[in-house]
Length: 130
Image (cartoon, rainbow, N blue to C red; front, side, top):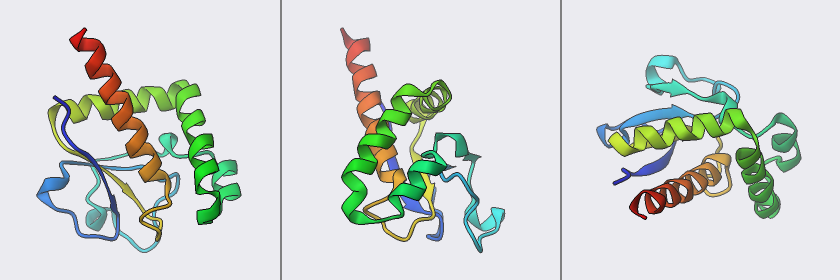
């Protein structure tokens, strides 16, 4: 069984239900100390490329294409795949919260990553059951 993989803004207070908190932004969020962030890991290399982030510019009308491009980066990059395996491995043991800094709670890379990881975990679970 895979535990929950959720998302949360880094500026929101941590809670015990978060489980393992993983910052998935390429840059450390402004105005927040490491103590207040309470992250267990910072996986900046799983974040979208700088070029993709610049292109997206947090514009909701570009989110669908951003999602496709970011998922392609996730699927094709061995480093991102290794980090995804680590996150999925943790999620077998406990809850995981992907922490991000974007203001938009709907159109951000953590949402894309959460969905992608959930699908990946479900596919892995189905393979183990066969």
